[in-house]
Amino acid sequence: MANVTRQSLTAAEIAALALSLAHLGAGPQSVTARRGLRHAFDHLDLDDDVIATTLTTLTTPLAPDVAGRARLIANAITARLVIRLQYLDAAGHLTIRDVEPVTCLVHGEFWYLVGWCRLRRGIRAFRFDRIVAVEPTDLPARPHLPERFLPFQRRTARRRAAA
Image (cartoon, rainbow, N blue to C red; front, side):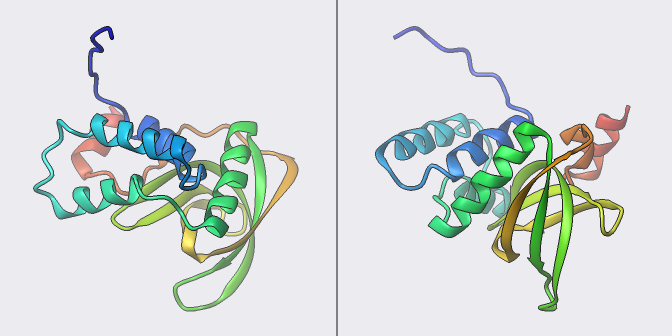
């Protein structure tokens, strides 16, 4: 097999790859794909507990019900369509929100949908395990650059991205 030059992936590329794997379930293809994603991270220093936990979460299959919602979210991101979420916040309040999905990411042990919340009129991160239901719509979403809306970047990375 030909040698492959390893280049670093952007946060948006990692998020897209991981989301694609997340809704594959636990079949044989997904196991091979997750192993490949782990190999992409071999060069990283995993002394940071948050990074180590995040990488474990990235390469662990989602529960079937969450994977189904992740598939709807991924399709909406690709099609640039608004989705309607039933979302249970940390205090246990259920809200219905129209969201322009931008990207998905993992931080620590949780998956998040990052999107423009039309209810709150701002960018928000929604934990997958708190999304009760996802309903696709035919409403077009405005284009948003994922790199501008990644909430868990270190401050120095944000400054560089703004420059």
